[in-house]
Image (cartoon, rainbow over all chains, first blue to last red; front, side, top):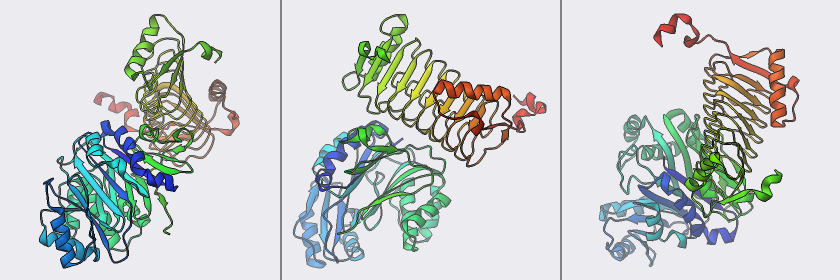
Length: 301
Length: 232
């Protein structure tokens, strides 16, 4: 099972209310994935030369201010740290490689959920409705967002095994399905220098996408290589800096519905999520064809 | 239908699907014949397992398995239908006015299923006697292991049509992206022309028999070889 949702804003009103619109979509997919939930929001992009990091620590009382102060002293950082449950967003005044390696060196217990200019990833085990509440998802604005409710089949129910998975700067992946050749691929990717935190199959797909992009593939080529090399079932929703993309495997057993109005583009595993959106009844609604890339991107101002 | 003024209205915004289905099942013993279901919002298993000559109209989109196992009733979905609409239909009629998701009328044994829009992958998979008319296109792997009945497609068919088909008659007006294993084009004889005309009329499809091609089994697979009968 697992449920996927995505919402891409076409108007400033939808951007302002993105979290309030995404939360009911995610909630509607609770019974497809009661184990864990997660979202990626693209919002408040930082300036060139800065990197926004979403960090997580298992201890809810973790001293994020100390981390931020340490970062500011060492490599430069914004004065504010935005906390959301046991996650926090900090803005480093350094490139991503430098910011991430600083965190890894001085705070090895802190997990880096995402890095980029606009992306923020929040994810946790437990019921999706509890996740929505704890992380105040309704309160988030953004240009576009992805969400996932998980019913674990391939690996343990952990925060790190929840979706979305970061696949590089400002990139992430959510997945409904299961991959059968992930162990072999993980071995191959480890030889290529890709690092993994879990035994999760989707993390392998994320690592695979990261590797293909490192090798110079554009998104269409990444997807073409996925269709060739990934064995299993998948509907992927891929978040990028400026939008999102949807692709299903050639057999297309895993469900996917797309809907579009003048105000938004929505993707979900089921229409039930889309039905929660204003204007859903009159939206153009269709099912994405197998092995075909669908993409929406906003022009950067 | 004119009956809509007097139809029994069930609002799924306030009534659980289980309660709706129980009331529809109870109607086999008597009660309202005409039903109108509002606010379906993609809920699963709407109007499943009816066994009475009811006339049910669903005003909106349905989730998985709508009108599954239908017997005798006429169910109209005024929207899109999710996975497995009319799966295992026994008799009666299911009419989807929008598009149908994958596995439309899967394993259906009888009755008529009409889709005004497109049906996606695996339409009529393992069908066993149901008659299906899709006015738009159908997706890949449709008619997989189709055993009997008829599948009429007024638009185009996706890849691997009729893979491992038995005795279902498939009629396609548009293009076929590819035929599945053991599925071949066959002559459109008088019997088939009459059957196709009957189905087009029943579905109210605006198409001429001459525009269609027929596909069916070449009967060359392992299962068709009498020497292998002992293996079953």
